Length: 209
Ligand code: URA
Image (cartoon, rainbow, N blue to C red; front, side):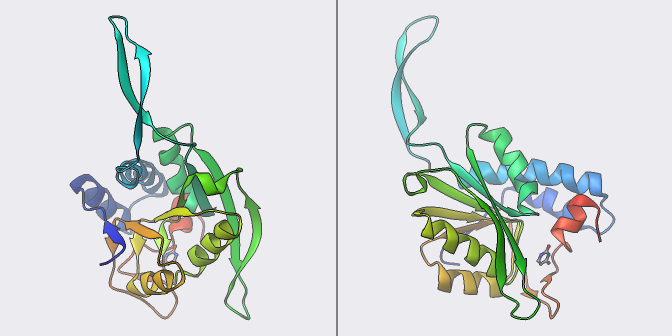
């Protein structure tokens, strides 16, 4: 699928299968999400540009590679995005973090922003927006719209599962933003759940209903 990278690493697929199981506990789900988010982060940052820096090892001076440019920004779409964020920050502890809170208006069914905080110079940074589930795509579309209004230019979207309907909507709104996911599932049901999916990611992560 154009513009979509499916991260098919065996460890990712194995962990995802356990997360999908309805009998997996809240603690187990959270631990797996942390682990899988590190593997996903590894893949979404695979092509970061490097530059050479002169350093001294205990033996000699050398030109050693470091990631080029300003610090990355991870953007968590609340609340489920925080589950992916945690593991990613373990891998890239110097990343800057933005949070975007959106809720769905019952009448219009459109996302309404209730919280937004982001670092400066978004136009000079690689921005990785995270939300475990790309379902209708409405929240991700709105979040990225907001980031673009604040100057963001180089954006990637990372999720665990994506529905084909969400991918279509997302790509119509933001054709310039690449999607990274562990799986493209079958479809979105009438209640807005991804099928086969894993249920409500936020509820499974936090033990709510
Ligand atoms: N959000 C979820 O948490 N799960 C779905 O299946 C769809 C949206």
